[in-house]
Structure formats: C-alpha cells, structure tokens
Amino acid sequence: MDTRPYEDEGRILPKWAKSPRNPLESPLHGWNQPSPLNIGSLKGIQAIPPLMRFPLLAALSLFTSSCGADAPERAAAARAQLPAADTGFATRLCHAALDRTAMTVRYDGAYVRIPYPGGDVPADTGVCTDEVIRSYRSLGFDLQKLVHEDMKRHFSAYPKNWGLAKPDSNIDHRRVPNLQAFFKRQGASLPITQKAADYLPGDLITCTVAGKLPHIALVVPAPDGGDTPWIVHNIGSGPQLEDRLFEFPLTGHYRWHPVK
Image (tube, rainbow, N blue to C red; front, side, top):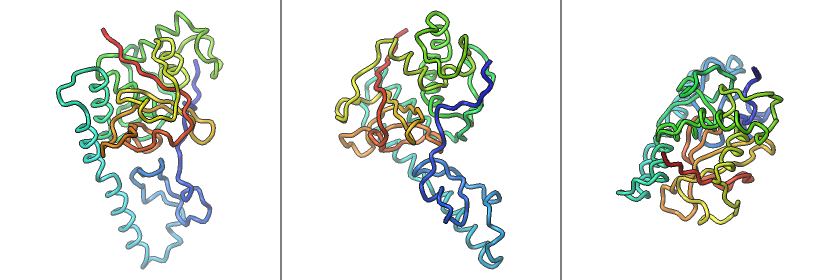
C-alpha cells in the first residue's frame, strides 16, 4: 500500500507570498483567489505594535471575507452562456463543474482510505482531480470504479510513477497521470493546440504548473461570452472559475462524454 501523500500537484503561492520581504507569512493558496486567512497563525504578528495590530487584523479579515464575493455572479454568467434547453452530457458536465465553485474545499492531498466503489475523501477537502471526480460522479459516472477496473485489467498501461505493484482504489483515480492514461484509453484524447476554438465546454485539460506538477481542469464557457473558455479547477484555493486555459503548458486535451 502506498501511504505517501498525494504528490501530483502542489499549492501554488503568489510570488509576493513567497517573498522573505513579506512581513506576514501568508497561508494564501492559489494565484488570485485566496482561501480564508487564519489570522491567529500569521507569524510575526506579535512584532506589530499593539495599537496597530487590531486595525491591521480587521482590514485583513475584511479583505479575505470579500475575496471571491463575485464568484456566484461569475458562475451564473457562465451558465447563461450554455444552451438553455440542452440536456447533452457536455452541458450537464459544465453545470456540475460550476456547481462545485459554490463549495468550500480545503486543499489537502493526503492519502486517505476511502470506501469502494463510490468512495470520496471528506467533502471539505480535495485536490484538482477531486473536482473532476465529483463532477462526473454527480452525473452517474464513478471514476474511482472505472479507473480501478481498467487498471486491474491493464495495469501495465498506466504510469509507474509511484512504485506500486498493483492498483490501489484509494488513490489511483486521484492522480492526474492515471486519469490521463484512462481518458486516452477511452479514445477521448484530442490534439493540444493554442486555438481557443478547439476547446469546448465540457472538455478537460491537463497541464504542468510550477514546471513539474501535473494539474487537471474542466473547460466551461467564459462568463463574459468571450471566445476563450474559462476553467473550473482547484489549484490550492478550492474549486474556482478562472480565465486560465492557456496560462500553464498544456499536456493533455480530452473530451470524455460517456453513455450508460
């Protein structure tokens, strides 16, 4: 059994949050949608003069509570770009992904024993793959079960990045390279291009962040009706709707619309 933490994706901090010149070591995760600050854990807060401490903490609390306040409006605007009467799989998958943006999820890639089939880590935790898994599961397709069954039959067709000798239903479906192999084996792989028109709502993309970390996201319409789709993903701040389709080097493009 592989008990190592999930290692496929890291929390991506803004450059300023990593800077040693930053007087407060921020626990913000993600690029532009910070998670709520735990004010009591900020190192160096005791160094701030007492008379300045309360105003600063109050300002920080107000800032973090307002971050993402327009997220529901963006999600609603993205939904409005979908065909109103369309009940096709791609449209339903987009709605499922946009539903995820209303959830509060703490980024946590720890190895967790979960039931099989239909198992999930705690609903308030997860990583990028969990957004894909939960979106498909809401439409009746259990990637935990599907990936595990395929790996049992064709284990040699999957990456050997983790030194496992057999499938592990607790973690295999939560690893980006395994999902890439699964989607490719389902005939869902599409060319990787830099043309926005090639990426349709309901598609999936994989990419590499910070030079080496695999990441996965769901493609949805741009809230403003623009030509370049947006993505729903968890890159460290929980499920977010963002304009970042081409921000990182793409490693995969998939259109998996299964039927029962």
